[in-house]
Image (tube, rainbow, N blue to C red; front, top):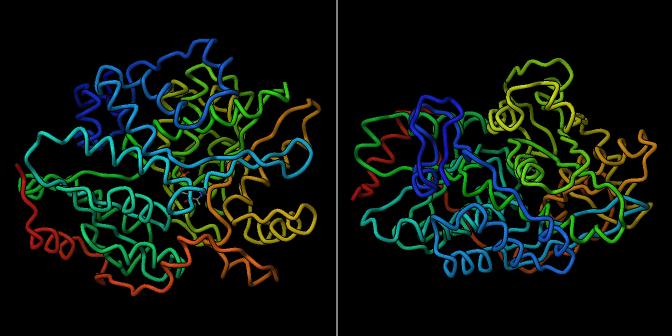
Length: 438
Ligand SMILES: *Cc1c(COP(=O)(O)O)cnc(C)c1O
């Protein structure tokens, strides 16, 4: 499988190069030259398949030329070693719980698959790989956990000081070993900017092997299609058209679903649900894409003013706004309505939503009210509510059971390096660390 750059000014590369370099030299995003189609036979078998088996089956369609089958099987089963149950919340509305991995957010899927893929692909290269990650909260801990203890790989996390929850911060800053956390005096977009600058810095790239692990890395994108197949398999028994609502920030999660549909998964429609950062809903409405600075909300993992996967969505739909609109509806929701929804759904259905998942729920419940057709509505529940207990406790008096993994991290001590949002400082830090290129 070959990958091309969405900017079309860099050559096509193998999966290996796309994964290890993260971003093409022309600063576009890697996309597959062809999208493999799944057999109707596989779709028929989905209801009986476990998630790891689906990961292996779908992964094979993409990567059979690049990774031997036995290795791929190991990568698939080891990275996706937790469940994603489909839970009925109310009539025709289901929560696809993507938060049963080690860091309790959906990013575990992409991060764990990517970490194992990268470790396999760089086995022979005798060099140290430095992974730069800008994180608005959940990405960092998922990626860092995925790579924790992997020999020859060093992870540098950049997170915006004071803009992630206490728990998220603890998850990022207590890992140690091959993981370093930089606390940046700025926004998430500033962090992302520093990382982008480092990738474009030729001097720096001559000295060390830098790569990205943000949602732009293709090895994170592919596994984010697996759970759409799994959810479809679980919903097949209802024999109704399936709609997915995806709470979105950088739109990597939604892109995974769009690829699944392009491969042949029968999805009726997608809903891109956002918080007040409504760049994509505005694009759907008006046809132009106008990135802005991000605004702070209670669903902070979605506080993105310039969604990084947008060019991929355009590629999937041949740069055609009306084709995009055919498959994707979009809606933005305020913090006020998000809180109200968490309260209502808890009181009505005894189901507790995190602020991100609540936006997914809002997207599907609004759409179901507007459609005549009898459909199965699935929203992606992207984080465990316990990760946001401090936000939720401000407006809802509820006992939130903590998964064991989250409880233990709270008692550890934070270790981070504070830094201004200044590229010279960042570069100096990287050079001083002295990571070695092969
Ligand atoms: C990252 C994240 C999102 C947004 O996902 P994208 O792929 O960036 O659109 C939503 N919810 C949670 C909990 C997240 O961590």
